[in-house]
Image (cartoon, rainbow, N blue to C red; front, top):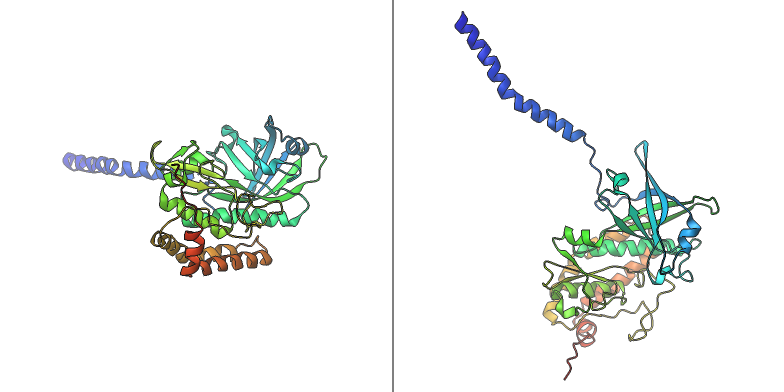
Amino acid sequence: MITKLRYILASILWSFILLHPLVSKGAASIQEDSIYRAPNLFESDSLIELSITTDLKSLVRDIGDKNKYHKARLSYHLGDSIVSMTVDLKTRGNFRKDRSICAFPPIRIKFNKSQSSYSLFHNQKKLKMVTHCQNRNSRYEQMIIQEYLIYKAYNLFTPESFRVRLAKITYKDSKGQMDPLIKHAFFIEDFEKMAERNGKIARYDSKVHQDHTLINKVTKLAIFQYLIGNTDWGVPTLHNIKLISKTPNSRPTPVPYDFDWASLVNAPYAVPNQKLDIKSIHERLYRGYKRSAKDLEYIFREFRMKKNVLYELYTNCEYLSDKEKERVLNYFDDFYKVIENPKRIKSEFIDHARTIKYQK
């Protein structure tokens, strides 16, 4: 009897020992699943709707060299709740910060870590916002969407590119002196985070010649700029270009940004550089250096392979007007006609390509 009782007790104890880790694991799993995981801002293409409340007049007029940050409150809906946090806003940019060009300049937004944790903006310190430029002209709304889509288009060709997130923002004046503005804008991924995502480091050194970067990657970049009709970039001057690389001394990859002077955006203030042999931003000009037909074909093949997904990016965008979609697709059609024609390839990308001038 005693032996049988000992056997039963031993069985119960052994069963508890075996089951205990499973119970702990299950409890841990439940606890882990119950922890709220903040979404990554740039891992979704869905439109985010926000409100930003600040002294709007003071903000948009503070465009000097010594401009400062302005306190603001950012809010958005999360289910039945409202997420709200204090942020700091500062005007930024060069050309678009000029009030004769843009009544509403681009903005840099700085987050408070203690308030932004577990929000859509967790793990973000500062972000660039591309804004609508003009308050009363619907054309500028389409320009915002076009520039946003150029970033998304370049994402199709390489992960070594800036991710973006489209937003619809209600700007509210904290002093009640301006009516609310409801406009599209988009956030641009932080430079160093973009580099880190690609296993690279951010480089800040200038005067790096195009041919001292990774050749295939800079050639792809130059062809993409030709595709969208953009000549407003330069590697040695870091003009609308960032550099990333594996090490401080390895050949860097150039990453483009700031596409508002591209033909696709069609900004009324955009004009070609006087040093270039074009009369309009809608004239394409290849700004890359001379490559062999074989090297070019290797890259053209990728553009052909991604033609359908590129076109779908634009046709599926509900925020782009039908008129703008037609204009863009016609412009793309012209590009694809060029890269299917060996004579046009030779003329556009080889005969008229840039060449390195060596000093004697």
